[in-house]
Structure formats: C-alpha cells, structure tokens
Image (cartoon, rainbow, N blue to C red; front, side):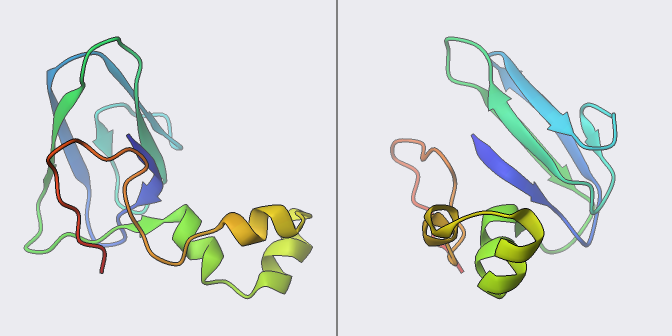
Length: 109
C-alpha cells in the first residue's frame, strides 16, 4: 500500500496483475494518473494485490505527502492545518512505503 503521493515529472500508467485493489486519484480518473495529481493505492481484497506502474520517463520521481509536510516548517503546517504536536511529531522526513512487502528491500533516498 502506498500513501498519498504524486509524480512531478510524468504521468503514471497502471496494470493490475492479480488481487483486488482501489487506486484513488484526486482528479477523478482511475488507472491513469496525470502528472502532479495526488493519488494513493489501497488493497480492498483479501489477497495480495500485485500491480505494475509504468512511466514514460527515464527516471522515477515521487513526492510523499507525509515527507513533504515533515520538511515544511512546522509553524506553517500547524498554522494552515490547525494540527497539534502529535501530528507534527509523527511526520517522517524519510520516505518509505506504508506497508512493506516481505522479502522486498527498500532503500530510501
């Protein structure tokens, strides 16, 4: 499962290989994500969801909402979202998947 994120450099194409899932885009499309549109993927079934993301680009770039907020000055986040220290302390400056797949090694940048 991925948290809300977007790709500032390209569109994303997806092909679901097995399982049942939901991908939500904050622009109304499903399966195609226009570049820079926030979206997330959720497994809605009882089996492992496998899907393939495709990009017409020579490099992968994404922006995690969690990481973006963590790297924003805390007073701006607090003042604009009216949140307390609990949320600010929970934000992560290093991006990583929400749910790690067993046997998959993830190397945050």
